[in-house]
Each structure stands twice: as structure tokens, then as C-alpha cells.
Length: 130
Ligand SMILES: CC(C)(COP(=O)(O)OP(=O)(O)OC[C@H]1O[C@@H](n2cnc3c(N)ncnc32)[C@H](O)[C@@H]1OP(=O)(O)O)[C@@H](O)C(=O)NCCC(=O)NCCS
Image (cartoon, rainbow, N blue to C red; front, side, top):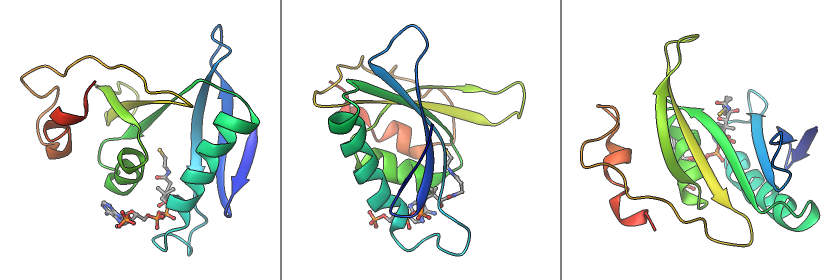
């Protein structure tokens, strides 16, 4: 389902087989409006809707690990890094992020070695893991 918050577009789908988990994807601020704080505010409104209007318990999304603006918004809004993989389709490093809705998701501690090199923000997250 396509949704709009604060003029920022997103797709929200239910994870097949797990009806309390939302998959958030296809997020974009219209070109020309990017970098003015709209995505940040939309993220907060979207999380509010996911938890309270739609009563999801958890959400999942993926992000290109080079998309530092989106990663900044995710991490600032309580999303937790769950791991990353190299896409054999795009050859991009893709991060998987999860977030509890109305509750905190327990995550495992990250390995001592970073999963992939070159992403300082992953290594900095040690204190955030429950
Ligand atoms: C990613 C996207 C949705 C973010 O929306 P936006 O409206 O541009 O983002 P905002 O202006 O709200 O971002 C503001 C925050 O990002 C931070 N930020 C901006 N550029 C940044 C960068 N290059 N690296 C890290 N943080 C950055 C700002 O400092 C601000 O955070 P703060 O308030 O804590 O200081 C938008 O840029 C977009 O549509 N990009 C193309 C599509 C895309 O990448 N979608 C995501 C797919 S997973």
C-alpha cells in the first residue's frame, strides 16, 4: 500500500506469514524537497501510524549501506541494524534494519569483526544492542 506522510512517499506491506510485521520500502522524498528535514519528520509520522493506526508490532526495511542520510534517519529513530549482505543483483551492500513498534526489539550482540569493512557506523553501534 502506498502511503504519504509530510509529502514523503512510502510503501507498507505485511510480511507474508507474519501479520504483525510491516515491511517498509519504496521511501522517497520528492526530488527538490530532499535535505530539508521532511524525510525525518515523515519517518516519525510513519512510525506513529504503523504502531497506532495499523497496530503492527515490528517493522523491517532494507537500505543501501552507502545511503548515509537514510541510515542516519533510521538509527536516530530507533531502528536497529540486523545485518547486511551483498546483493548479487545490484552488487550493493544492503543493510537490514528492524524496529519494535510499541516495544523494544531484543537484538543479538554484533560479532567482534564488522560484517563488512568500510562502514564506520556499524562498528559504532556496539552500545545500542540489547
Ligand atoms: C532518503 C530520503 C527519503 C531522506 O529524506 P530527506 O527529506 O532527504 O531527509 P531529511 O532532510 O529529513 O534528512 C535530515 C537528516 O539527515 C541528516 N543528513 C543529511 N544528509 C546526510 C548525509 N549525507 N549523511 C548522514 N546524514 C545526513 C541531516 O543531518 C538530518 O539529520 P539531523 O536532523 O539529525 O541533523 C530522501 O533523501 C530520498 O528520497 N532519497 C532517495 C530515495 C532513497 O534513498 N530512499 C530510501 C530507500 S531505502
